[in-house]
Each structure stands twice: as C-alpha cells, then as structure tokens.
Length: 271
Ligand code: PAF
Image (cartoon, rainbow, N blue to C red; front, top):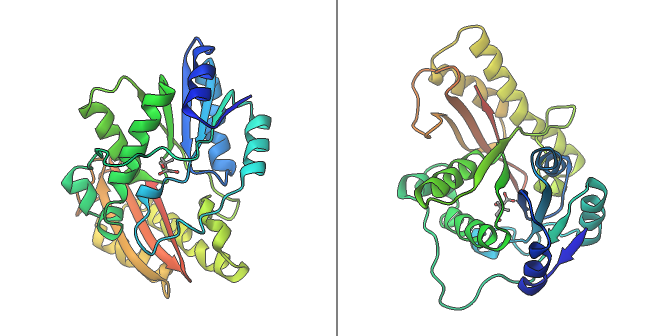
C-alpha cells in the first residue's frame, strides 16, 4: 500500500497505477461500513484508492470539526489489511480565494442542508477536488448519507464528470444501529437510545409491508418510537427528494435525523 500525504506523492503513485481505479473518499475513523466500500471497490476495479481528510468546509460553526474522531494509525492498519492500494492522507487541500461548488438550492436547503447551512457546498467542493486528484473510474458512497449521495450523483451528471457513482448499502451492527464514525461519541446508555432510529425505520418498513401507504401515518409511528429524542426531521421522499404523501414502492426513502444527547445521528431506509 502506498501512502501519499502530498499532491506530489499522490501524482507519482497514481502514475504507476494503470487500470481501473475505484475510490472511496472518507473522513477516517474507519469502520465496517468503510470496509464494505473497499471490498466492493476491490471486486470491481484493478486498484482501490481511499482518502482520509476531515474536510473543514463541510462543518458549520459550532459543529464537531475539532473533536471529529481522528485515528490515523488504526486507519492505516485497517486499510493495509483490507488491501487498499493507495491511501491519500493530505494535510490541507485548500488555498486562499478559491471558487467553491454550490449545491443546487433545493438540495442544499432541505433536510440536512436546512439544518447544516453550507454543508453540501463543502462536500461537493472537496469531492470535486478529490476526484480531480485521484481520477477514479468509480467512486463509492454509502446510502446512509442519502442526500449527499443524491447531490454527488447530480453534480457528476451536471458537470459531465466521467465517474461512475456506486451507491453502497448501509452497514449495521447486529442490533440495527447504522455504523457511523460519530457513534464513537455515544456513551453506553446513549447507544441504547440511538437504537430508536433504526428500530423506528424497521417499524416503518413493517407497516409498509402490511400495506400502510399514507406517509403521515408512518411518520407518526416513527415519531412515537423516537420519543423522547430531539428529532430534527422525519422525511419520506422519492429518489429526487420530493416529499411524498403516499409510499411508492421502489422509489421511496425514509430519512431521520435526531439528537442523542449532544450527538446528531442520521439514518434512512430505502423502500
Ligand atoms: O461522507 C463523508 O465521509 C464525507 O462527506 C466525504 C464524502 C468524504 C467528503 O468529505
């Protein structure tokens, strides 16, 4: 495994990789969800590249940039064991007075975008920079960040970027908790509370299997299970993130954001 920490090292390593490159951009604190992206990328490409960069521009004031988990040595060991070919761990990828990529108004102002103003501009800007540096043929993103995935797919299409975006299933603990680097913030009792998110989504899926179609009824059932967590949103949308009044099987995503203590968690289910 080559570890590149500068653009020069990256470009030298990249030149030696002739073939299809599958790329997983990450912010580190790697877990089994990231490993599943690596595994899939290994199957579908000649080489796998992974980046670790805690991107400052996607964190708002008062968010967790400073305390975001950083686990450099453990991450390097995981990447080596998982068979990553190129690990890019830059110090800084920004200069002064740079242009940014703006997320489209609708995508940037609903759900995560409404609560985390500017977040998706930061995500799209860093993903563009990373794509330009790594030049992958395919890039792997988790469905857990569904709105991010949708906006990246939209950007790639709109800017004619020649990269296939591969959507990967959410990895869960046996108890249902969706894996997230931010789970590291949770105390033992908060981890139990956090299970309400996945439990409410499983209940939604059960209701839909029993032919409940009204989204208002499903939202009410989810809210009931999430009590007493502070809920930022429960949304039921189609694949273009338009709100739905009735469930359309094969075209629906149910999204939740809620706070467990000081930790903000998101989860979703694709119906
Ligand atoms: O999903 C993430 O970890 C980040 O938003 C990403 C895509 C690596 C950009 O910083």
